[in-house]
Image 1 (cartoon, rainbow, N blue to C red):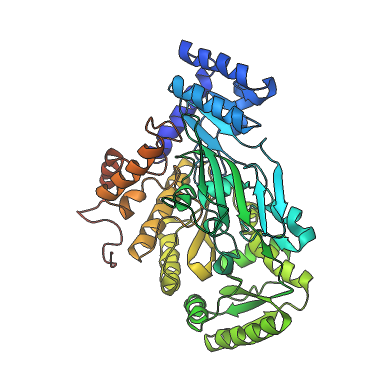
Image 2: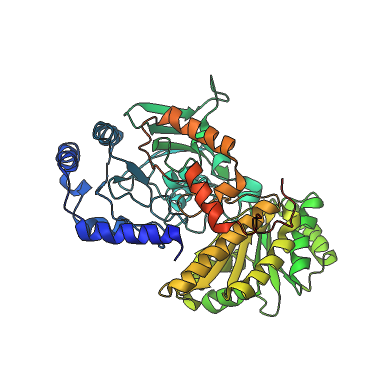
Length: 507
């Protein structure tokens, strides 16, 4: 294991053994929380808190002191005020589907879950908006808006389970984010509670808000600034027609370049996704979507709109893809077939789970022109680390999701997988990209933030957090690395005075 993994592994097992031996201050907090929450909404026994020890990134685990499940905004206020008074850290949690360890608890802190705040407060078809509590599932928004021929566009692969509050925390995307945008492009207003219990609103129901526009600061802040209690989202009309192209390529470089060619032609598909050969094979065995198993890579390119618009765009995209070297092009001829094509991409993660005991999903973003470069680097890394890697990603905006396959029961394999993942993220930065696109930083990428941001930039991040949470009790020690952590990471990864990929251009 890495030093980071060792730290959390040891801390977890120590806490697991000593859970229940609370100090006086912690016991007083539990008693105070019992007075503001229903009995079923406060968990502190080990067997009850165990399901909250991690999020979707199960590599890092920690039992919390307690779990609070408020049902109202007033209860959220009381929980936060009590924790501030007792100097107890609070980790906000949505549905727990996050993949960066952002909802991993702290041994001396509580988890504040908004899962029970799951009511759809209002659907306004005239203004095309929905007002929701944070625990509402992503897919439930579209289901509620369907009678009005409207839907909520961001569609993460976990949309059947993930919550809108978690989507706000991570600025989640999905396969249709190229045309319709990420969470930040589809949220109008967020209501939240600060650590001291004060209610704040970000955004406005009008066209503009007085003062600073802080909505973009709140979205993607990973629970470090405030606890979301209400979200107003934008709904969009269902397109009359949608069709998807499945294009096969016999060379990874051709497929990567085809993505840039489509965008360069002035085309903005509703979705533009890519999978390499190992990914398509794993997915085909799982969902039988009809993928081309001989192709080195496939692209899924969707067009939506009126029948005339879709017909024209499909023809133009097909022409560009052929010129870029596509060996086979298949266009969905029905809504059922379109959904089958997408089912493969949506099920890439569970498909990986069928062929490997564990997988480690990365989330770097790079300029589209460098897709082929990064994929070729990942192929070389596979040989050096002795681990397989499936590649699935939002090709249209360069958001890569390499899935490193390993056996978590083998500590050496986990150590190699973690280093493999770190090297991929460092390569993304070297190519002019970022260490995360939609999964957030959390615990997983906190070290590689040291590669992307210098000390002055990190100080600015801490300044923003201090303005909202001066006591540093909301999800502390996540997302923003300290100077000491970056120094430690540098000692672990700098070789002969150079970082990995020192031959590649920096920015």
